[in-house]
Image 1 (cartoon, rainbow, N blue to C red):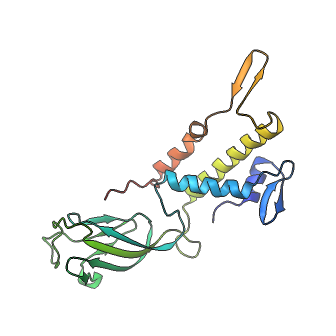
Image 2: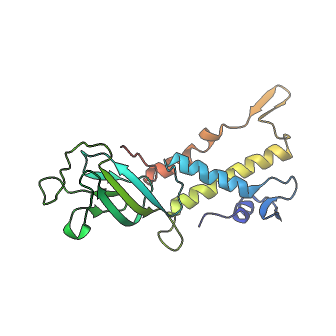
Image 3: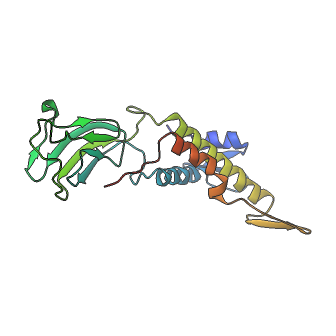
Length: 207
C-alpha cells in the first residue's frame, strides 16, 4: 500500500482536512491526495514503468533472436501463455519450453530440446500474456519504493507549505541584497531517485 495523504500531512506537520473525498491543507486548500498521485506517476516514469505499478494482465510481443524476454511490467505473478507466432503454437512450460522468473521469461537455447529456433530473428515472433505488478493481496510494493514515495511527497509538501505561507507561492524571493531560489525538484530529490536505482527498481528494458 502506498503512503496516505494523512501520513504525509503528519510527517510534514501540516494540518489536513477532507474535502470532496480528497485531503487538502486546512489553511490554503492544497490537494495532498493529488500530490501523492503525481508523486506515484513520477516514480513510475523514473522506474521506466509505462503501465504504473498496479497488478494487471499484460500482452507483449517479442522479436526472435533472443532467449531472455524481459517484460515491461514486473514482477511476473503468473503467465497465461507464451505463443510462437511463426509456428502458431503455444509453448508448454511442462515440456521445459520456457521458464518463468521474476522479471523475465527464458526460452531455452537451440542446443536444448525445444521445437523453436531462438536464433530466428522473425519480428514479433513471441506473444506473452501474463499478469504482473504489485498488489496488497499478491506481491506487495517494495519497502524502499514506499519509503521513497513518502520522503518525496513529504519534501514537496514542506516546500509547497513554505511557498504558500512565507513567499506567496513564488519560486524565488529577495531580502535586501540577498536573493534566494527554491531548489530544483530533480536535484532536490536526486538522492531518492538514486535509492530506486540501487534497489534495482529502475527498468532498462531492451527490445
